[in-house]
Structure formats: structure tokens, C-alpha cells
Image (cartoon, rainbow, N blue to C red; front, side, top):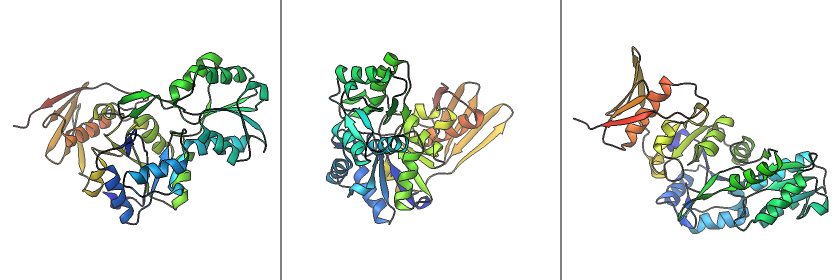
Length: 330
């Protein structure tokens, strides 16, 4: 499968690692990708760590990575601010030291208080962020002339102990207090993906992620193919019911499958019934029910189900909730 692409633009949380721990087999698979001569660029919405620390973490897990291989939402946010503000403008940073460093790197001045008269607020994830910092942002944003930028709006992040609140929950708190909505610099917006592809001169990249609302939607926004891996936030059932803009090009259980042939999926229609086959597996749509003839949970069954359901519902602005029935192979 890897031969279809000239680079991978890879998410981190839920794809490469969960917290400090590697996703099983992911570092080895990514090293194999690099061994084919294809670059791997890590595109992350995590704005709490500098690219140097991210690169060191990935390398420590077994996938050799340099700082130039990491594109962060903190960098994207700083670039967005630099486009809209004059050099030397003050920016209230509601986030980590890594975010402050990126703001300073583009010629802006990070500050911590409304009393410093900032012209913008930039908000990024920091596990140590508290009420006082969120309140300071809200006080500052009461002035409608102050620009508000969020590194990302991920509602959740996968950690070693489970799913935890992400930056989106903190942004939502400030939005609720101010009645305003921020500009979003990172995923799912297209610029962060285009920057990643341009760094390595890729013309046929694939975006790899575990989240439909950031990774896969971002790939669509950037006009790129996408790979959903089932090692993080979203499940196969969630992929099946995804709205059109969040439907991945490919569905993998793990990154190991990059080195296997991807199965062909064929769809057909008989009257009002839509069906699809993937190798020996068949899925059929009748009304709101998807019947999959396979062992429960079979990945080819999910692939066939997605193809059939999406063919029956080609344009959906919102997520759907089909009933899934598994029928054992006779």
C-alpha cells in the first residue's frame, strides 16, 4: 500500500503513541516507511511541547526523527498571527512555554496579562492551565478588536489511561464566556498539511490519523488522500457513520498494514439495495440497516460496510447512525 504515496503526513497521539507509550508496531512501521525513501512528517495539534521534544520522544520510541520532521499547531498559530499583526505586537499567550517560544520566533512579543495591552490572544493546550489564565483571556477578548487564535480545537486527547479533555474544551470555556469564536490554525485547517507536504516536496502524500474531525477532515480540506487507523480515538463504527467530509480514503487496523496490499472494494445496486464486497466479505444496505456477512468485527467487513453505506448516502453534512447487523459466514 505504501507505494501509492510519496510521503506520509502522520498524526501523533493515537497513531504513534498514547502518552509516553508507543502504539504497538507503529515506530517499526514508520522506520520501514523511511527505509523506502519516503519521508514521514509529523503533523500535530499538540501545542504544549516544542518540536525538539516531540522529535526526541518519537526517536526514543524507535522511529528516527529530526526537528525538521515535526510541524506543530503552535508553529501554524504563530505564522497566522505574524500574517495579521505588525512585528513587535504583543500577544497574550494562554498556553505552554513552547507556544510562547513560537510566538517570539516570528517577531511578536508574548505577554501574560490584559494590562500589557495585547493585540491578540493565542490559546493552546497546556496540562497546567488553570482558571486564572482562561479568565485573563476572556477579559482581554472583551475588546472586539483583539484577535483570537486557537492552535486547535480537539475536544479530546488519547492518553495512556484513556481519553482526556483536549484544547477544544478549554477554547469552548473562553468562547462561552465571551460569545466569540477563534480563528483555528491547526488541524483540520489545510495550511498545516500543505506546510508539511511542502517541507519534503511531496506531491502524493497521505494523511494518517485516528480522528475523523481533525486528521481526516483536514486531509479533505487540503485535497489529500487519508488513512484512518483504529489505534486511537475513533472506532470503525464511527468511520461508518461519518459525514461525507470526514470519510477516509483507506481504513487500517494498524500501521503495519501499510506494507500489505489494500483490498479492492466493489459496490453495486439492485433496486433500492446497495451492496459492496471486499475480498470474501459482503455488506448490504436496506433502509437504515447495514448487514455484514462476516465474523463480527472483521476489518474487511467494516470496509465493505463503509463502501455500501457511503454509496447509499453519498452526501451527508452530519454524522449518521446506521444499525449494523453481523451475520456469520455459512
